[in-house]
Length: 181
Image 1: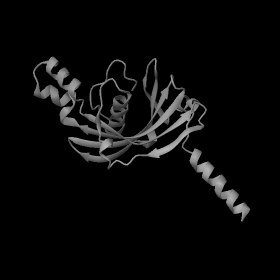
Image 2: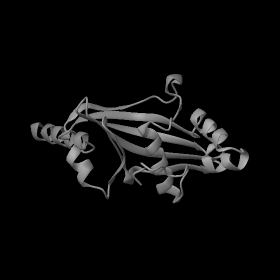
Image 3: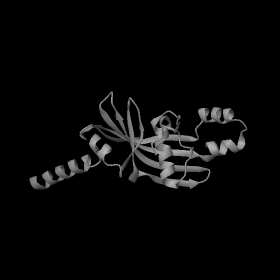
Image 4: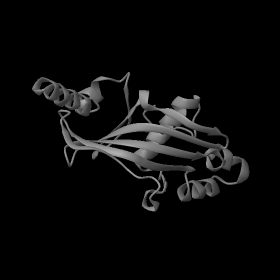
């Protein structure tokens, strides 16, 4: 009986830590983790293997993906399981066809990028990959977890753009000069 209990404990520890990721793993596994944004505050990576199309109904698209945010100020890695929602009618290419001036297009994009995101679950790891906060899945039917507009300057915007590019081999919005893909 003790051996069975010990095996169950060992198995649960292995499965619990199987999803933990270290900073070295993120930085040294470009075939698995794509760096999509870096600045003085941190880095954001996307797990390429996690990108999954959930809805293809142009102009609407939905893609799931797991991102990892390296927060320098907190010295942690945050794992976020995301749902990205796209409205291609609000993309730059679609807006250029509707509006005459670049200023009008820019104003519309600043107001609404055409991308919303929602977090399905999260966990927090130390840089060495040890778990700081275990994975928590959110109840998405709760009204406080509605999809939020994704601003151009947020890391989630770059992850959403990369997820779309990786899924359809085309840009949702044209790449910017600082874009890492």
